[in-house]
Length: 595
Image: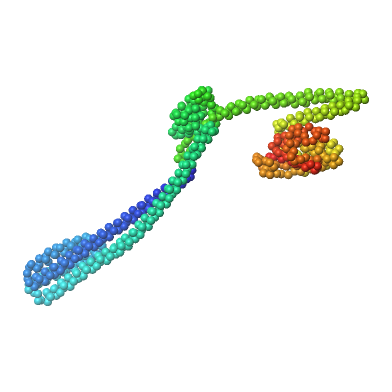
């Protein structure tokens, strides 16, 4: 699974978890807030209820005291004074409780002080009227005035108590309104929070579902990749291993066991067990490499041998690179390959190179023989023929003279053939270094070597200016020489040869019959003549060694010249093509890579 996918999934789930936790905390806070508001509202209702009860008790006590006072005044019965004396204590106690309940309310505290003053005044008036009544002064103006004053004081006490009750009622109403508003908002807020939570949970579910689907696909892909890797290890004869740096433990792939000739996971993957398979002559070297690996946490390419239990010796090549993950955990990922076949192939190639070197020496010996030993008898034959022709020509019959001419022609052809073979063998070697060369000068040099035949045939040769190239100068000169000689040789009778040499650049994609090229573009040199031409069906055959399209009696030649041209172009990683039209002319196109 890609690391980016895992990281993004973990980050997303952490964000979702954080949001969910936040929502839960918000919901808990809101619930706590509304429960607290509700508790506060209940406490306030209870508080108001207690205050009202006390106020009602006080009103009841005042009414009983007032009734007892009147009954006593009318009947002079002292039993009417008992409620007055009892309710007086009750009134004082209730007043003290009321003062305690409303201690956080400055306005009610003020009302209580006023109420206490009024009650005390009312009691004082009550004592005065009671004294006057005891003295039988109920008809005196003083008693009447005191009695009226008592009623007014009692009314003011009642009014104050009603005022205090009304104040408590207002407080209760405001508190209820506030609580009602909060409690009305609570379901809406909780509803929205629940909806948001459900959306978050739905989003989380969708993401987890998608992640699990992707994870399943990745796991299937990993499983496929694992099987493919296993097959690749088997086919390519290599095995993988991991060294966990901090823990100093190893992991071996199944195919690494197979490379050692063992069953997968047949022994514990550790260094000691592995070294038991290493060739005794390579143990010290490999151990030193392992120590350097542990010290440098790196393993460059190393080579060593192992011996399987069946006695077969295998050549191994190993390489490892350090990998550090996002947590800083270090692992050395290694690959060990069986290169026994490569070693054997290398030895075979070395053997073949030695054979090729011997063949080259033999070819060099042949070139020497061809250039010296074979040409020496030809020179003697030509010398004796010349002497025979000079001294015995008149004594020879016509048939004898014809035979001499045929021998001279054959020896000339033999010399040309040997020279061309030597030229082809030298052209077959491409050890000469490439050099920046003026192609125009090489072309002029080739024309200069052909000046005599050009003059004899009154040929006209025109050429474009050709840029400098990195070539083997001698071979390119030989290329021009052979192509120009070919056009001059195969010219039409009684028609002066006209040879046109043009230059252009060609993209690699436009090369004929070439599917792939490592070069981008090519120098293109075209040599066109007005000679006898050829059928296009022979366009490939004319480059084959010793292949001739015309009888040797019609046109001289050995059939090697165009083969030399092809070999020169191939030595330069180029291509040559031919296009012919009978009795109209031939066109040779040379493509040399631009480097």
